[in-house]
Image (cartoon, rainbow, N blue to C red; front, side, top):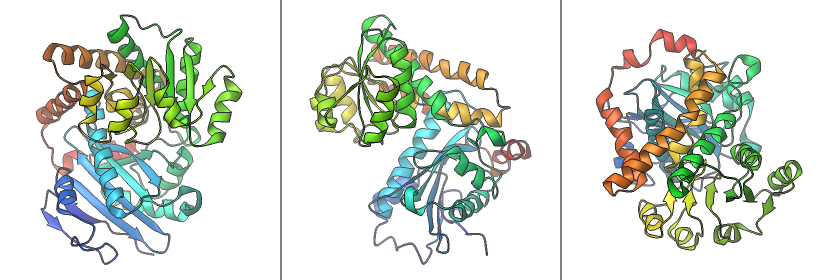
Length: 394
């Protein structure tokens, strides 16, 4: 069986090719999406009919090194929604790596489908072949809908994989340091807002208690915070309550948003902070693990107008990237944890600079990331895909 070949929108070559399985731009690929895709260095579409694989891989930047980013496996209403998501996520990964001080760029992949029914070893192997065909400019890992054991299968066909299971020499579940990093950002936000990092007695509402949210609840419970949770999955809530019976459960998401709290922590899928959510929210701080939390650019300003301190998501949730990227640098969980603790200082710097300049924290974080990317420039493909990185990622 032949290796699936990606169909690319690649700004290095300025070439555009359309696969028979991908609709013509006159259909779903609008001018707006083409413009957004052009901000990336490379966007690849891959479809393998035999395994059912449909994936989009977006490399936003390799200015700092090979682009590292997870593989999101989920259902999308259409291909345009999948492309929009992967473009947003890839950009966020590049900014996340830049602000975390990592020698890596940012990228992301989405696999379109229901992981509960569509995921299979053959699909994952074919996906691994697609990643391998990019020659190392993109290094994949876990995300929503994928786990470390999936990356073990991907790695049978691809050298550019991190976040593998500990049994195969990987760093395991990246939720470990993602949750720890979010906690560090939350401590920074508490310091900025209330002059103290002490969360004991603080009311924290956590939206989404999956892999990361569950661990975050544990950290908060240990610090004596008063935690209320909500998740669309009752089983996830039950697991939290079984471990921490003192945790309260909101009747629904609307009740969680409207409940008076000190911190609101979005830890589900992105886009949950809409204009209506910002208007209804009764928290003083927003700090969570979800990617691309703001549903629209203006939501950050709405939060600020209501006096709510927003922690840029890619600052807060960088711990997972730090964890898996450490596999490329010689894995040491203790050292990765120390680097993840630095998220607290980064968040404090963002807040302080925002106050000094009278700007939104999100604007300042963007500028800081873009400045580092601009200083680095764009290396050649041969520089991006050095043999040393390829061996380390095996």
